Image 1 (cartoon, rainbow, N blue to C red):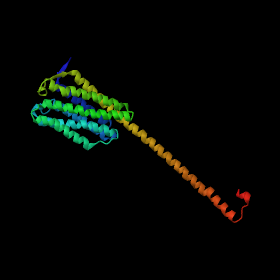
Image 2: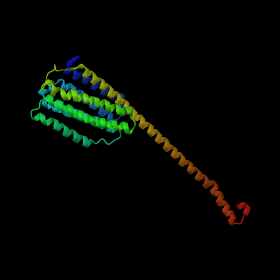
Image 3: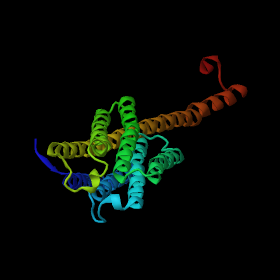
Image 4: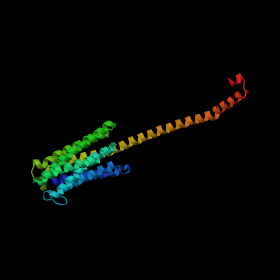
Length: 275
């Protein structure tokens, strides 16, 4: 099995996350949807997290615990951004306050052990576990969107993001605990090259599926709006036809009946004419 330095692995992951987040933004720029912007922000935050964890550009995080906390809280927020993005895409209430409270609680729970002597490496592992847990909220929402609106891409996206969360849980959550408390401080800590490749492939796939899902949702909304417009136009035509018939009755048959009544009252019509 081929191994590479962990710093290289993290930088490769950062490059994948940043590149595909920007590609998704450019591809979906005309959509002008807040969910797309949140998805992009989440990808860029993940790239920042991986870059700083690799020791760039500030040096090893073991020497910068406050920066580690800042980066940790940022990436936790980005995980919830993905959840809010999928809820917006599904047309659901984004629950801003609820998720902001969730973020604050989880960020505090992760940071408190650092104040009592936990190493930054283990803090990063703890944050990775929290991120993987939050991502399961996204998986649930994406799968529900796919089931309720019959969107296969949503179910596929749920599976891919779930796989990526599992990989993050194994690599990010277990590496420091299993290897060494100072693993992230050592740039030569080795990880399998296959993990970087798999992470990149999954990142490529889930961003591609996200783009396809957004397009599917907007095509479906466009079709529904078109069908609604056609139904509304049909109803308007039916009402216009009814008004025309009423006008014809008023101006045609109605006027004839009034004239006939006046002639009958004046005795100008005999029984056959009345019939």
